[in-house]
Amino acid sequence: MKKTVMGLMAMAVISSSLSATSLFFDRGFDNDFDRFQRLANEMFNSHMAHVSLEKYTYPKLNMSENDKEYKLKFELAGIKKEDIKLTLDDDNVLTLEGNKKQESKEKNATYYREEISYGTFKRAIQLPKNADHDKMQTHYQDGVLIITIPKTEVKKPATKIIKID
Image 1 (cartoon, rainbow, N blue to C red):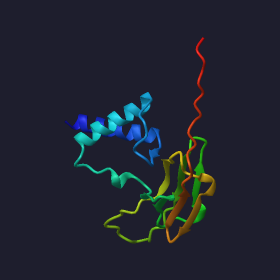
Image 2 (image 1 turned 180 degrees about the vertical axis):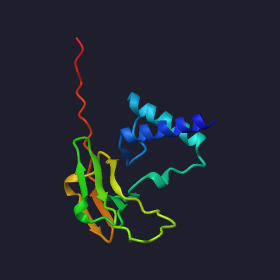
Image 3 (image 1 turned 120 degrees about the vertical axis):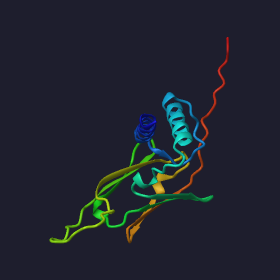
């Protein structure tokens, strides 16, 4: 049983780390990797419903939308703005990465519990096709990064009728 659980956890972590988190879940599963990821997620969720991996995802994120825009809110307590990097690639994947530097420990102090984590992090979000990343706005204050992305009209691909001889 322990091997099965560990195998399922490894498969879920690997499949989720290979691609970005999708902002929308209505994405078509039209390629092999998407089908594999969906299968892995379904297997993991059915066997591990009682185990939460939420505490291993950093930074924490709230995603919301209304009829005009998408809003991403990252919790980055204790991180300076200079230690954060935000990028957008050609595939419309928004990546947040940075480093939470460890504070110096008090000398001659006995620590009974250490729950604050430090180190580098990276989180990628697949933006939907109608996200207007050219008009994206960011705001960082009090350890919270808010990214506002207006929605735009998605152009439907033109269909060309081809004459059959």
